[in-house]
Length: 326
Image 1: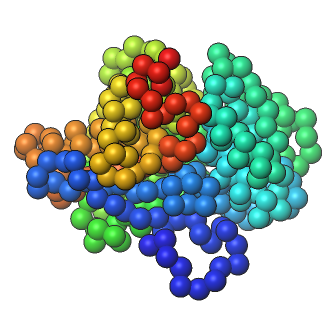
Image 2: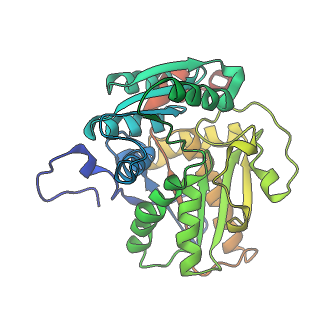
């Protein structure tokens, strides 16, 4: 995985086949693995959907050759779409809430995309509305809409999940992943449950997010620092299928931050807060399996580390929690 024995014609050929690496800070007898999506050319899991969605949309005629893709995004999806759009001959415009990572927006600009900011207090809902307004104003423009497009889920069902199962010889006991659009988890869950319907599927969100409401759990909406996962409005998260999810794990910012720092210091993973949250939840599931509190078909837990901490250095991601969260 991630090694190529021949020259490649396009950066798109380097997307996927990322390493699956063991996380060692877990209970004895239950192995935890993380899919390291920073090994993609745009350094995030969203490179997968950027390529997959645009290739399928061109094939289907959803967007014409030379057309424009407009996407509401916190950044990583924009980077993935920008990489794919340029290689596939499409223009790209991204609508980004102001509060999100400056690094991501700079990278989207470097990749040739146009960036339009929307007010932070309008959230992703405001960005979504603005993206659709722009699409109506322009000719040959389309909104891939990662929050509702089934191709998002299909990308992970077709690429990420088979890579995990091939690496582990189908011995996967639990899938635990953060939910922003929920495309990653839903693609993994569909693949996993088709192979063994006893596989435990866990969604991960920050404290203050409302994904738990999908499973009729009480949630108190609040602000959170963890980027890339969570929701303030479950009506915008159309891909999430609660029937495929056993539990939603709510992780405090402080726990996610402590874990991302531990992952760097002890295990050499330079990952962001969403990976920290995913790791905390994966270890929680692994302990439940080890203690006999949770039944799983195999003593393995798999999670996804979506992107790199380098995207968030300007926000002080490795400073003390109080500095980072202020």
